[in-house]
Image (tube, rainbow, N blue to C red; front, side, top):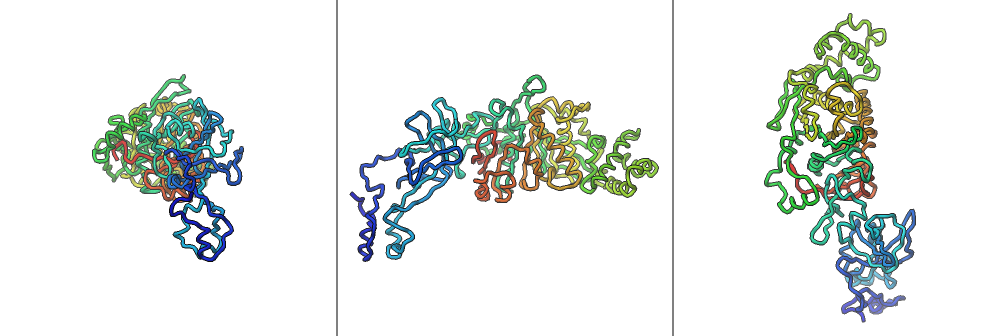
Length: 584
């Protein structure tokens, strides 16, 4: 018997003097004996044309009854118990659509004569197309999809954390990033539980902790990039890793942070009371193994001295200077972006010649050496006189005099404090000139790269090799750029080499940027984990966002994140914490 006030298309056509060819459509509500779905159930497997799975594509459609239509959303994770076996299919809703019932044709002229209020949603069928991701076995393991669900099988939402973790093949623990989400909202299961998402931090699943296969954190300004980075970096402090080259001993990492905006010293302190998470939120975070609160004395702020500038930031900090002797290891520190390849080769010859002399190993002594025509004469057999002039112009830049040898402790003398196990060393640079900042940052980065990749006899290099190091570089596009100057080429080549050896040398890079399109492609290609916040579509493509998220990322609000980490899980969305776990 038809439900009361149900729209009768055939009768409406007769009233209008139009003959209909079809009988009245039978809506789901017409069957008073229909079994009601449970709260977690969303519909049943249907066959509109064909139901199939294969090695390359699948076609599984689900009929969504009227009362469940407002609950089904694209991206939602669902489970289809097979019934005839113990396995169940784990899938997500890929597509939602309406289809016509036989008695109504949207393309006909019938709608001219019928009020839009009379032809409602109930006159159509809603279907969800689901994409299977894995099969959950009885022993709780994910396997490839190889069995087909039967027609009319019930389809339901996920109901347990285990279903999500097994279905998505998520790590059980690691570096906490946030909670698995759909369309910006964390999945909430019975009891209000959320599903934690971790970056694998052990060697059991992937062979190496993923931090040593490198991480990119990218997003436009105002989308929570620094907030997300702070929360992630806090999880690294105190973690433990095996050193394969040192007989498997377990060591904690040294975290070094390049901080252009003087923000990351906040990892030292707890979040302010007005911004701190509620007690129940703190309890939940501790329950999933997240680390919260400042690291205290484990963190030291190291501030480079440049003549004419003053650091204003953290109340406690340690001054240092870049000694010119580092140029012996890294000649590009005084090359800048003005020298071409031939001029840079000439500069290297002059640097090598200078460090073989008995002159004081200072910038002033080197400048006098280069200006001395008599001492340059032997080099003119290999270096054109005009090239020597170009090198002199570069070497005599005034900011070199303001950066090198400034009287504070040399960075090479402070290496035991800077590079120490289970410590955080933050290098703010916003008080420096642009040129001075580049010298300082490249010096710090180069010491780490060479200490991890070369067998050097220098004491600072030996120390860096003895424990894991994670180097976090904010505004990474400024130092590992697409530019084609000789200095840029050398830096990129050095860090691509260091990144490739990160697994065995226990060097992890965390690149933080709002301009991923400006980071050199060779460097980006070494980052296996992408943590992506809101950004423009072109930027999302450049940052390596999965295609299904590239059009959505421009609309991501603060705290909504896509994680693409092939060795960790399938690409998925997570919800970052709405608060920072340290001072921010």
